[in-house]
Image 1 (cartoon, protein in one colour):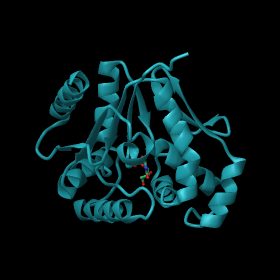
Image 2: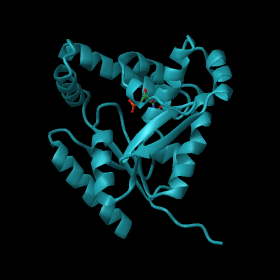
Image 3: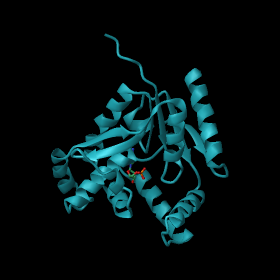
Image 4: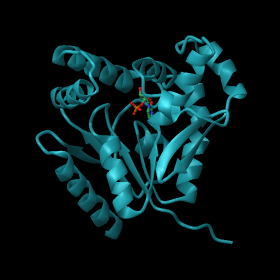
Length: 227
Ligand code: DC
């Protein structure tokens, strides 16, 4: 029996480049499943915090992994993540969990733990998957690979607006500094560092708004799939 050939679009890039917003809209427009892989790393980070485990402690996180399950599902078309069967989607967006996710995502054991879930999903469904290593490691066979970026200053300005809207008191300088630290960590870790795949198309969204970014990527994806 021949396997159904699915279509995979990989969108990688640094924090704050707008990957998830653009990918979510595009997935709806194209009828693909949107997979936010950062949510999976966040779930592992959350699990570590729940167990009072230091997310940097390789050994302790490693011994946690055989005792947890991380799965995902879709409720009204929105991705939800489950830790040991419990929907934890509403608990993984805090600054503490962001830090924990960043720490556990540097551990090879954690990347290995989440690999099959990501790849199997792309074998079953047409996906737009966003993350840091999708085009390079998880879906090297993706039909379209996009590396979405913007200057640290532009990404910090966008993130500041989001935080201020949520009522968080923070300055532009703090957000920019945080952005630069995370960029450095993500692109200098030993395992699956953030970098464009050799065959990725680079898109810089400096100076273009969300709607323009969506249009740009949609045209890129459609013309790549045709060609
Ligand atoms: O995209 P995000 O901010 O939700 O990701 C949370 C953390 O997980 C971030 O520090 C980077 C890491 N991550 C990763 O290492 N690989 C991915 N494919 C997705 C996210």
